[in-house]
Image 1: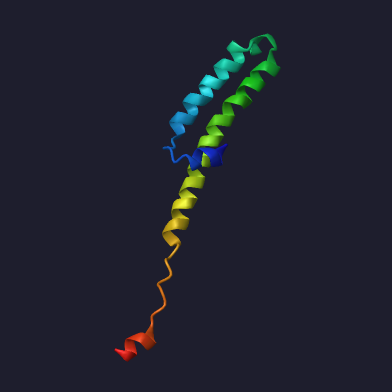
Image 2: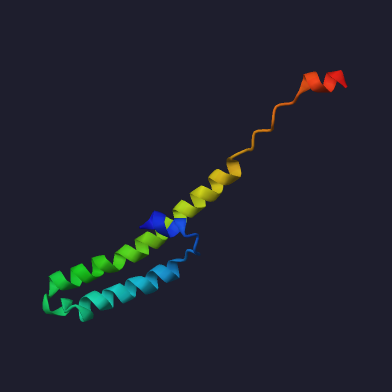
Amino acid sequence: RAEDIADVNRRFSASLGLVRGVGAFFNGYFGHGGWREGVVGFLTATLSALYPVLSQMRAGQIAQARMIAQALATEVPPPTRLRQAARR
């Protein structure tokens, strides 16, 4: 999931991950009736809330690593043609 987010070239932010995580928690705990399960429902909702947060954080790391790799990649200059230059 994190690589998919990084491939889209969207902006990465921890706040977006937190908002989506809180939404996932409320959806799992209240929307799907996790409150009826007790502790198991709470843990399930909490773990499902961590997934978008961690995905956003990892996508940011992947994007940063790609930017560094592109910056370090040097373009190989074309070979010089000494024979042609010497003839002129």
